Length: 172
Image (cartoon, rainbow, N blue to C red; front, side, top):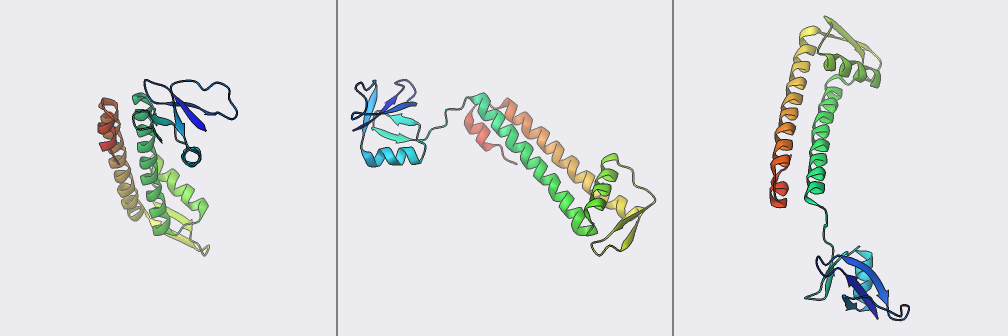
Protein backbone atom coordinates (compact mmCIF):
# COMPACT_ATOMS: atom_id res chain seq x y z
CA UNK A 1 0.00 0.00 0.00
CA UNK A 2 1.15 3.57 -0.72
CA UNK A 3 1.24 6.37 1.84
CA UNK A 4 1.39 10.12 1.44
CA UNK A 5 3.43 11.69 4.22
CA UNK A 6 2.42 15.31 4.80
CA UNK A 7 2.99 18.34 6.98
CA UNK A 8 0.34 18.35 9.67
CA UNK A 9 0.13 22.16 9.76
CA UNK A 10 -0.22 23.10 6.10
CA UNK A 11 -0.96 19.78 4.37
CA UNK A 12 2.09 20.00 2.13
CA UNK A 13 2.99 16.60 0.69
CA UNK A 14 6.44 15.66 1.98
CA UNK A 15 6.94 12.29 0.34
CA UNK A 16 5.58 8.98 -0.89
CA UNK A 17 6.13 5.71 0.88
CA UNK A 18 5.32 2.15 -0.08
CA UNK A 19 4.87 -0.51 2.63
CA UNK A 20 6.48 -3.09 0.31
CA UNK A 21 9.66 -1.01 0.10
CA UNK A 22 9.91 1.02 3.31
CA UNK A 23 10.13 -0.51 6.75
CA UNK A 24 9.06 2.70 8.44
CA UNK A 25 6.30 5.02 7.22
CA UNK A 26 6.58 8.51 8.77
CA UNK A 27 3.54 10.18 10.28
CA UNK A 28 1.32 11.96 9.68
CA UNK A 29 0.27 10.14 6.53
CA UNK A 30 -2.76 8.95 4.64
CA UNK A 31 -3.16 5.62 2.91
CA UNK A 32 -3.50 5.90 -0.87
CA UNK A 33 -4.65 3.20 -3.27
CA UNK A 34 -2.68 2.49 -6.45
CA UNK A 35 -5.11 4.38 -8.75
CA UNK A 36 -5.16 7.56 -6.64
CA UNK A 37 -1.39 7.40 -6.22
CA UNK A 38 -0.91 7.21 -10.01
CA UNK A 39 -3.29 10.16 -10.56
CA UNK A 40 -1.45 12.18 -7.91
CA UNK A 41 1.91 11.45 -9.53
CA UNK A 42 0.65 12.32 -13.03
CA UNK A 43 -0.97 15.57 -11.90
CA UNK A 44 1.88 16.66 -9.61
CA UNK A 45 -0.33 16.79 -6.53
CA UNK A 46 1.45 18.35 -3.59
CA UNK A 47 -1.32 18.77 -1.00
CA UNK A 48 -3.00 16.36 1.40
CA UNK A 49 -6.35 17.13 2.98
CA UNK A 50 -6.07 14.82 5.97
CA UNK A 51 -9.68 15.38 7.02
CA UNK A 52 -10.99 13.92 3.75
CA UNK A 53 -7.93 11.82 2.82
CA UNK A 54 -7.77 13.50 -0.59
CA UNK A 55 -4.86 14.70 -2.67
CA UNK A 56 -4.73 17.78 -4.88
CA UNK A 57 -2.52 20.59 -6.11
CA UNK A 58 -2.15 23.72 -3.99
CA UNK A 59 -0.10 26.82 -4.68
CA UNK A 60 2.19 27.26 -1.69
CA UNK A 61 3.68 30.53 -3.00
CA UNK A 62 4.19 33.34 -0.55
CA UNK A 63 2.21 36.52 -1.07
CA UNK A 64 5.42 38.26 -2.19
CA UNK A 65 5.94 35.55 -4.82
CA UNK A 66 2.34 35.99 -6.01
CA UNK A 67 2.91 39.75 -6.29
CA UNK A 68 6.12 39.21 -8.27
CA UNK A 69 4.30 36.77 -10.57
CA UNK A 70 1.51 39.33 -11.14
CA UNK A 71 4.04 42.10 -11.88
CA UNK A 72 5.75 39.85 -14.42
CA UNK A 73 2.38 39.02 -16.01
CA UNK A 74 1.64 42.75 -16.38
CA UNK A 75 5.07 43.39 -17.96
CA UNK A 76 4.39 40.63 -20.49
CA UNK A 77 1.00 42.17 -21.31
CA UNK A 78 2.57 45.61 -21.71
CA UNK A 79 5.28 44.25 -24.03
CA UNK A 80 2.67 42.36 -26.04
CA UNK A 81 0.65 45.55 -26.51
CA UNK A 82 3.75 47.35 -27.79
CA UNK A 83 4.61 44.48 -30.13
CA UNK A 84 1.14 44.86 -31.64
CA UNK A 85 2.08 48.45 -32.52
CA UNK A 86 5.20 47.21 -34.31
CA UNK A 87 3.04 44.70 -36.20
CA UNK A 88 0.64 47.54 -37.02
CA UNK A 89 3.50 49.60 -38.46
CA UNK A 90 4.59 46.60 -40.52
CA UNK A 91 1.07 46.22 -41.91
CA UNK A 92 0.84 49.92 -42.72
CA UNK A 93 4.25 50.20 -44.34
CA UNK A 94 4.65 46.61 -45.56
CA UNK A 95 8.28 47.23 -44.81
CA UNK A 96 11.16 44.80 -44.86
CA UNK A 97 13.12 44.01 -41.66
CA UNK A 98 15.77 46.69 -42.22
CA UNK A 99 13.08 49.33 -42.70
CA UNK A 100 11.20 48.18 -39.58
CA UNK A 101 14.36 48.68 -37.55
CA UNK A 102 14.81 52.14 -39.06
CA UNK A 103 11.19 53.08 -38.32
CA UNK A 104 11.53 51.80 -34.74
CA UNK A 105 14.71 53.86 -34.25
CA UNK A 106 13.06 56.96 -35.69
CA UNK A 107 10.06 56.53 -33.40
CA UNK A 108 12.19 55.78 -30.33
CA UNK A 109 14.09 59.06 -30.57
CA UNK A 110 10.99 61.00 -31.63
CA UNK A 111 12.73 62.63 -34.62
CA UNK A 112 11.38 62.05 -38.09
CA UNK A 113 13.28 63.32 -41.15
CA UNK A 114 11.49 65.62 -43.63
CA UNK A 115 11.35 62.85 -46.17
CA UNK A 116 11.57 59.19 -45.16
CA UNK A 117 12.33 56.34 -47.57
CA UNK A 118 12.09 52.57 -47.22
CA UNK A 119 11.86 49.51 -49.44
CA UNK A 120 8.51 47.73 -49.59
CA UNK A 121 8.20 43.93 -49.77
CA UNK A 122 8.72 44.06 -53.55
CA UNK A 123 11.95 46.02 -52.92
CA UNK A 124 10.53 49.19 -54.48
CA UNK A 125 11.82 52.43 -53.01
CA UNK A 126 8.86 54.19 -51.41
CA UNK A 127 8.71 57.67 -49.92
CA UNK A 128 6.57 58.83 -47.04
CA UNK A 129 6.39 62.56 -46.47
CA UNK A 130 7.07 63.86 -43.00
CA UNK A 131 3.48 64.65 -42.03
CA UNK A 132 2.19 61.12 -42.79
CA UNK A 133 4.96 59.44 -40.84
CA UNK A 134 4.73 62.01 -38.07
CA UNK A 135 1.01 61.29 -37.72
CA UNK A 136 1.69 57.58 -37.39
CA UNK A 137 4.54 58.22 -34.96
CA UNK A 138 2.34 60.42 -32.78
CA UNK A 139 -0.40 57.77 -32.82
CA UNK A 140 2.00 54.94 -31.90
CA UNK A 141 3.80 56.99 -29.24
CA UNK A 142 0.45 58.05 -27.77
CA UNK A 143 -0.73 54.44 -27.54
CA UNK A 144 2.58 53.42 -26.01
CA UNK A 145 2.29 56.18 -23.42
CA UNK A 146 -1.25 55.07 -22.56
CA UNK A 147 0.00 51.48 -22.19
CA UNK A 148 2.91 52.65 -20.03
CA UNK A 149 0.61 54.71 -17.79
CA UNK A 150 -1.73 51.72 -17.46
CA UNK A 151 1.23 49.52 -16.50
CA UNK A 152 2.32 51.97 -13.80
CA UNK A 153 -1.23 52.18 -12.37
CA UNK A 154 -1.59 48.39 -12.29
CA UNK A 155 1.85 47.96 -10.71
CA UNK A 156 0.84 50.37 -7.95
CA UNK A 157 -2.33 48.33 -7.38
CA UNK A 158 -0.28 45.13 -7.14
CA UNK A 159 2.15 46.71 -4.68
CA UNK A 160 -0.70 47.98 -2.48
CA UNK A 161 -2.70 44.71 -2.61
CA UNK A 162 -2.91 42.79 0.65
CA UNK A 163 -4.83 39.66 -0.38
CA UNK A 164 -4.72 37.12 -3.17
CA UNK A 165 -8.28 38.10 -4.11
CA UNK A 166 -7.09 41.68 -4.70
CA UNK A 167 -4.22 40.39 -6.85
CA UNK A 168 -6.54 38.13 -8.83
CA UNK A 169 -8.78 41.12 -9.60
CA UNK A 170 -5.92 43.03 -11.26
CA UNK A 171 -5.79 42.33 -14.98
CA UNK A 172 -4.43 44.00 -18.08
